[in-house]
Image (cartoon, rainbow, N blue to C red; front, side, top):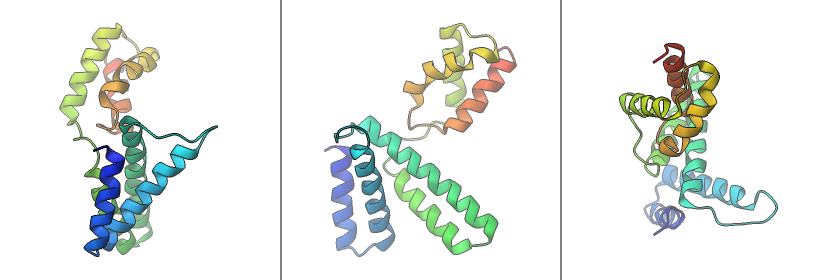
Length: 152
């Protein structure tokens, strides 16, 4: 069963169970996927890897919205955003720990021969397939920057 089929199946199940937050979150995810599929010159089905990218983007939106609502003092809205983020996370691959990311960065630096912050793009390009959907891009970027600045 593809990821998209699983999302649709889980939406049906959550509607049967009258789970409002799960139903609305899954609808929102499926809408984001549909929008991605029809963007561009011609409509197409997304691969599971592309679906993971959409899910990661939606998860990041929830985190950022929760932080914004917290700062604005809207605790209920922030809690809703966090609940949606938890639901989205169920469909994402297991996230890598910071130590695992650092190990991948070290091997990518060795593999590419990068030795200065100027070569950060080279390292990130090498890392991207290994971390896609499994680690926050901002965290990876800052760790690569630190590793290259330290000359490791």
